[in-house]
Each structure stands twice: as structure tokens, then as C-alpha cells.
Length: 434
Ligand code: UGA
Image 1 (cartoon, rainbow, N blue to C red):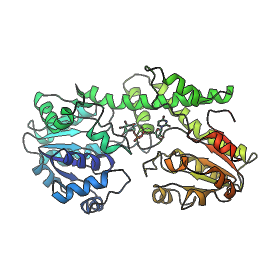
Image 2 (image 1 turned 30 degrees about the vertical axis):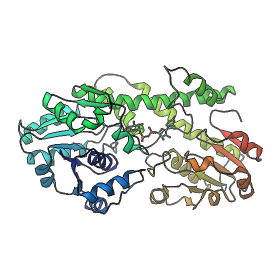
Image 3 (image 1 turned 30 degrees about the horizontal axis):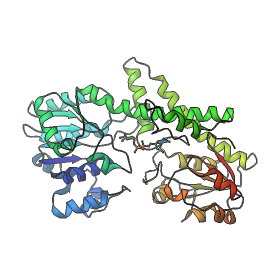
Image 4 (image 1 turned 120 degrees about the horizontal axis):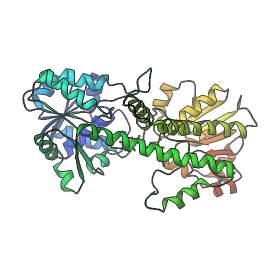
């Protein structure tokens, strides 16, 4: 089939490459000529394992191409995937739908009869219905809308797209469902469950899934707060409750909390949208507050370890990305903590295996090191805030000889406390006894 993918950011670039991998002819579309030039040259402007190889492979054969022209896209595609972002609005919790609307405004008037436009962005419930109305005004009754939310995780984007847990098809006609089933035929043949739904349900599946994941993380982080007060160990607690299959072990890692371009803004937008509908999702605001309190707690622990104030202290921060296997620093807990300590007068040095360029641009006042060892050299306190595998492999014995004072806070609950303590470190972790 001939597909277009509009928006070549994180979601769009991955979706375009994976649709080519499934055997389709794909045209990626973006209004940013620099992005398009980079992708044409096989350069992916963010870190995602496996994606550059896939893009290079399919641009080489010509099955995957890129353009800035909506005219070309409208003439080319049978199915058009809208993969643009829905960031948080500048002045409220609501999602900013400027880009989602712009796709329909730009593409709609150009579409021939029979075209299918498929929204993949995370949107407030009710958006698809509104967009379908606008599409009918712009393109006439021959063009149709469908909603097919995306559930990929950064760091696993290719695998999550080619082998998703489920496909959700929000459709209003048998024809739209048939077209989408044809697009995903190899994925469906491999056994992926398909859930057909109306528009509002399809939109809500996505926001509900992210709200549940965020709630699970904040639940265990709230338990970490209780553990801190009661002298208990949240990592043992999480393991023990996770053995109950109804609870499950995944997404129960206590630590400095969730960040990134999705969970934080999605729970805010969901709570806001629920208010508009006259339904209270107040608990999601508490989920958000618990999440933010974990960042406060790391700042507090750093202060305690420095004897009450961080002014003039040298602090090493291991990690800048919001999670490992990503160079994404949007709403990163690590950088938020680093910036606050810098504001309190600490001399902060950050190291991250992938996110250094992004961090430097966004936080130019922080110091940056080229390795974990360099960051730790002379430090009064080390903060482990993004769980890159290489940090787990660090040698506490060797680092003790480099650090000014051997004191570490494990903000992700994955370092071996016994090993660090045995090497002479004062070791503190969130939700675990000192
Ligand atoms: C999240 C969802 O997991 C995806 O299903 C969804 O498609 C995506 O948002 C989206 O809406 O686009 P992502 O933001 O890539 O994906 O990252 P996650 O793996 O969900 O991690 C989110 C944050 O939670 C990270 O900061 C991570 O460190 C933190 N986390 C995760 C914990 O603190 N504890 C855990 O047990 C798990």
C-alpha cells in the first residue's frame, strides 16, 4: 500500500520506518525542511536503538522517502497517518492541539475521494469527532478519519511498533477498518490482538493506559515514602507484592519518578479534560504531586549528606535522559534535580552516555563531564538518577579513590547497596533504610 506519515518526530519517524519494514511504500512528511534533509541523508535526530539502520535500509531501496510537500503527500497516499505532537499548553494543563489541527487544515483540502486519515497522536477525548467534522468540511464526504493510538516506548520504539501488545482501531466504517487491517496485516498475522472501538473509546484507551502506568509508578513511590518513614525497604516490598499476578512486577520500580514527553503531560491533560466533562480525576493530580515529591526528596538527601546545605558543594549527577536508552531530556527528573541543586549554589557536574548535547543546550549553567569517572572526581556527593546499564557496572572501589567524599544517593534503586557500602561509600537510596 502507499502510506504517508505526517510529522517525522519520534513517533512519525519510527512509524514511517516500520511501515516500510512491513512492505509498504511510505512517504514521510514534515514542515521542517532541516528534519527532512537529515532523514533523507539517513540521519535520525534522536537516539533510538535500531531505527537509523531501518531508515537507511529502506531509504536506500526507495521504499521510504521524505518530503515537505502536502500536495505530494495527498496525491501519493491511500492512508495518511498523522503523527504530530500534542505538547502541554504553555499556560495550562491542557494538551496543545495546534499541530493536530494543522494536519487536517493542510491535508484536508487536497485529499482525493476515498482517502483515509488516521490519527495516532495522544489527544483529549472528543478530538477525533471534532476533526472528522472538519475533515468532512474540507475534503467532502469521500475522505474519512480513523483513530489508531500508539503505545510505543522510547528505547523500544521499533519493537513496540512491529510487535505491539495490541492494535486499537477507532473506526466509523467497515471500509476504514478493512484498510487499517490491510496496513497492519503482517502484525495481525503474527498474533497481535486487535481491538475495534468507536472514536472516544480509542482515544481514551491511550490516555487511560498512560494514566494507569503513571499511577503504578506513583503508587510504589508513595510506598517508598512510607518505607522511609517506617524504616522499611520498598524494593523488597515491590518484589513481594509483584509476585501477585493481579499486581504484576513491571512498572513497580521506586525511584526519582517518571519524566519524559508523555506520562507527565498526558496525566495533566487527562485530568483537565475530565474536569471539562464534569468528571473528577483528582487522583491523577496526586499522582503528579507524588512524582514531584520524589525529586524534592533527592534534593533533600543531597543536602543532608552535605551537612545541611549544598552551597559550594561539588555534586556529580549520573544521568540526564529521562530514562536509559534515550537522549530525551523532556521533563527529566535527573536534570530537574541537577538544576535545583545548581540554583542552591552547588557546583554540579552531569554525565550521561547519550543525552549530553541535549542537556548542554537546555541547561548551559550545569557542568558536564565526558565520563562517569570524570564527573565523580572530587565530588562531595554522587547522585545516580538515570539507570543506564553502564552505571550499574561502575567499580565502587575505584570511584572511592576519585571522589572527594564517598557519598552516593541511588535515585533509581538498582545499584548494589552492599557492594558500595563495602567499598567505603555512605550509600542512601529512595525508600530503603540508610
Ligand atoms: C510511555 C508509555 O510507557 C508508552 O506505552 C507510551 O506509548 C508512551 O509513554 C507515549 O505516550 O508515547 P515512555 O515515555 O517512552 O513511554 O517511557 P516509559 O518506559 O513508560 O517510562 C516513563 C518514565 O517512568 C521514565 O522516566 C522511567 O524512568 C519511569 N519509570 C518507569 C519508573 O520510574 N519506574 C518504573 O517502574 C518504570
